[in-house]
Image (cartoon, rainbow, N blue to C red; front, side):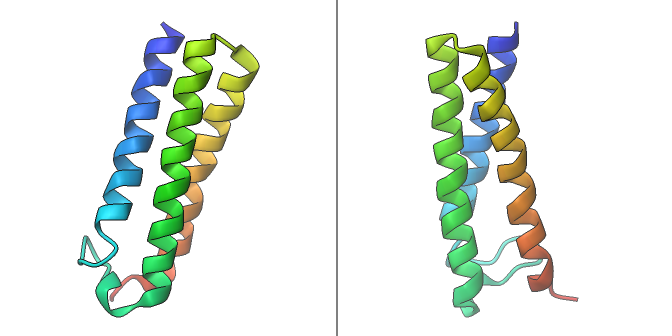
Length: 93
């Protein structure tokens, strides 16, 4: 059961990572990255990190390695939190 939930988590991480990478040059939500290279860089790095974390999570599931799975899940949580905190200054009011 935990493997199924971890797989769902990996899919969500991959979806977020792909979304960030696809929206480097077009506006989304309250952000306008097409006019801000710093915001584009944050999206590029964050998207890449989320895809790496998704791969790490899938690898931990396939290896059935519980400590690695815990590291991947904690890393995924931090990997989702940090980009959101970095995007706050770019919100249009």
